[in-house]
Amino acid sequence: MNDDATTKEGWRLLRATLKQQKRGLTAGIAVGLLWTVGKIAVPQLTRFAIDRGIERGGSLLSWTLLILAAAVIAGFFSGFRRFFAFRESRLTETILREKLFAHLQGLHVGFHDRTQTGQLMSRASSDLQQIQGFVVMIPITISNVGMIIGAVIILIATDPMLAIFALAPLPFVNIAFRRFSDRIHETVLKVQQEQAQLANVVEETVSGVRVIKGFGAELVQARKLEKEADDIQAVSLQASRIRSRFLPAIDLLPTLGLIAVLGVGGHRVMNGDMSVGELVAFNAYLTLLVWPLRNIGMTVAMGQRAASALLRVHEILSEESIITDPKSPVVLPKSALAQPVGAVSFKDVSFSYEVGHTDVRVLGGLTLDIAPGESLAIVGATGSGKSTITRLLLRFYDPQSGLITLDGVDLRALRLRDLRSSIGVVFEDTLLFHDTVSANIAFAKPDVDFSVVRNAAKLASAHEFIRQLPDGYDTLIGERGYSLSGGQRQRIAIARAIVADPRVLVLDDATSAVDPTKEHEIRDALATVMRGRTTLVIAHRPATIELADRVALLDDGKIVATGTHVEMLATNERYQEVLASWSVAKEES
Image (cartoon, rainbow, N blue to C red; front, side, top):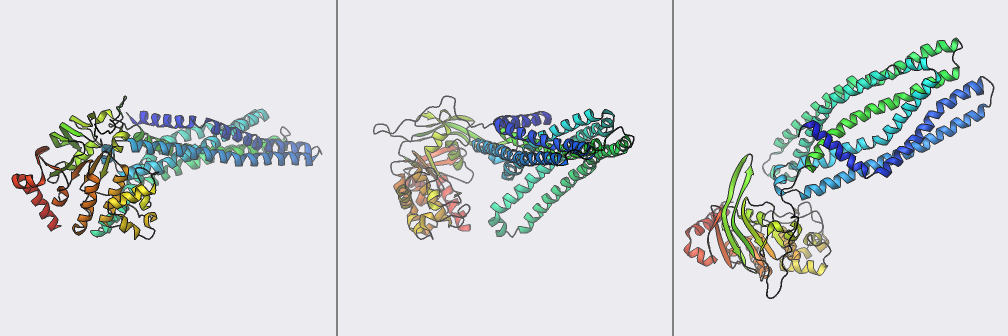
């Protein structure tokens, strides 16, 4: 899709959003038009006050009160005009932000793997603010256009010849608008792209501050930020140069009409062909036109920024997730005494990651069966695909070939929510949210009773250290949980998986961050949680592997051997090598 087509889709997105706000926008436009009536009435009433109240000795007080009434009406509706404009623009921003957020959450993990977080943050913040800034101008600009039309009609009706002199510059204003719009569009798009790059550097620096400080690499990041800031300055100055060439001309042209009116109109008054009141009104209307014309220039500029922002937002919203719910989903069988649940099966599964334009094979022809209630440990060298099995089970990705089932149902036949609520995962890289300990544990079920949270913490051997925190379970955890030790974070993550009460539990190297001297506490808790529940254990510590009923050795993308830990250790040389390599790596680290 070319840029013009993409831009049209962006405007179509905005029109569809504004349709939902038709009533509010209509009210804003109506109020704006009433404001226009008040503004346009003031010069005409001033004309009558001069010609009839002063020149002919009429009631000056009456005309003064009428002018005051028109000014009050204009002022009253001016406030309401801005209220409706800002209310509807913020509503547009909210609708688009919620739509973008929901869409981002629904996109497959592969999209997030290849997309910079800063780029997404920029679209969800600064781009939407640009759109909001344009929408706020819609009711205001329409009322200003109404004022221009009304003023032009009155000018022509008052003195057609003088109106020609006054309005002669307006076609040139239109030409200037068009050239300005064409020139500014590409530059504004570059500014927003550079802002997104800057946001990405800031996001990476903040989220990776411990790594940066650990390597003493503050200057490296500072140079990256300086480069992006300089790029923004350069393209912003380019945009400013374009504005400085066109906007003064747009301001100047209506003033030329005002000069013509003073010259030609002044002679007509002296010759008796025009009254003083008419000349004053004529000048007042031309003065009224200056701000609406300038406002239209601002709206054009903001429209170009909005067009660029809409294009970038549409890029995300037009992205289709390759992992979706089926049209006719199947429901998982319910647990019963005669029908235990939690059976997992991989049949001839092959999977490759796309790295650049190259497919890197990780699994090839993998076949694996886990019985309901059975615990299985998957052991393999680094990069052998252990964590990939977890990702495929959660449908973060779909295999290129083969079949994965849960309780005999193809994963692709299940709703994603049903599938993922049936599988509890404790990842190696534990992420806790900036919330209370209790809320983090109850993350999957926010409305669960506190007793369930406490029991889960006890099972995960987290209850005692939580009690010692300043506010116990109500203690606010810092961002990503870094205020806690690695072992404490992992135990809270285990408790979180327990509260979810899944039919399949996945422990993706769940004890890796736990001090070996404390591992027995976690191991005892895991043994309790795993009992009677299908569990997939990805581990390298022998003590954790021993918790599983069975061990599967993953090598070259396939399961090459299975058995108990003791049997494998005694009979399988490759298994011994993998465990030995992990031990050496641990000692070196």
